Amino acid sequence: MVTELELDEFQVVQRCVIQAVYNKQDFELDWRELKDLSVWRQGWK
Image (tube, rainbow, N blue to C red; front, side, top):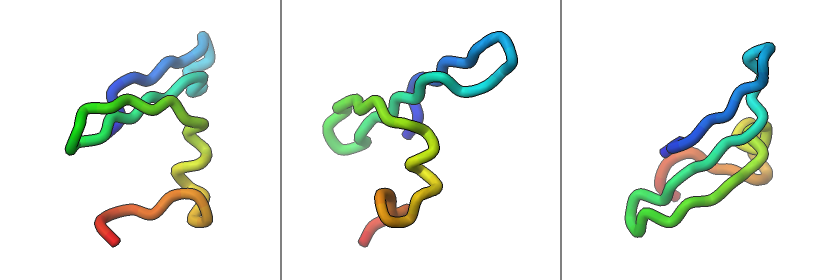
């Protein structure tokens, strides 16, 4: 789940933080990685 999103003055994403649902651990990541299927898989697999 995305818990933090930082935008610049042009509304472009500069920072994205996701949080693990099962243990509440936060991870900062490049938001573009969410679209890269070699890095990210949606859902439970």
